[in-house]
Image 1: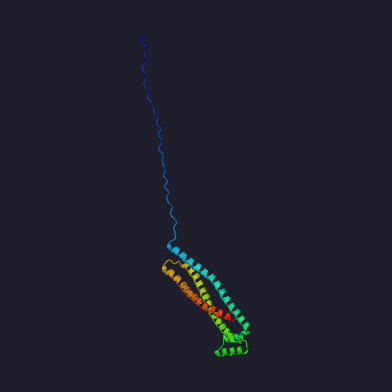
Image 2: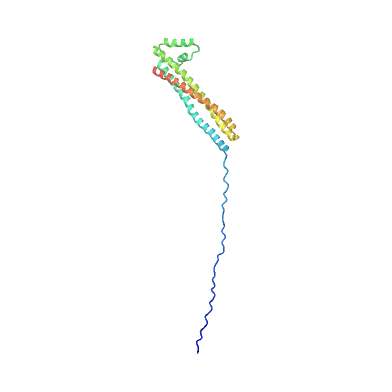
Length: 219
């Protein structure tokens, strides 16, 4: 008997499964920039600076007024103290001194000076010179106090004008150069006047201290 050879098995078809991923949707988020806050313009900034300038200057000048008023009072006290020392030094009465320093007429001054000389209270030429120095000192002191009072009241007016200009800048809100110049005109005029007065006071103070030194050398 012959051997039966089995027929080869047919090759099985191979099945390959390929997994495909579903396409994913990518969402792109685009950030929309928020609108920037509105900034004040140059006119608003200039308005704020101008108002601040007026009020700050007015406050600084108000503080200076307190010191200047005390200066005037101290000058008056020093003049009175020196006058009292002079009267005590030469044994004079205030009426006798006023008759010589503030006479009604030149003849009245000569009569008052003659009465003092006869009383022996001004016995020497140095005493007469001391009286002359004291007269010069009082004249310089009165002139200086008058200038300081003028400076004080001018500074008061300037302080009030600065505060009023600050209030006006809030109410009208100046946005043009013409309006700003209009607000600055009066304070700048008063300030220039005040500076000129301060310069004059400095010159008079030099003469005042020179007369004070000459008087103290005689006392």
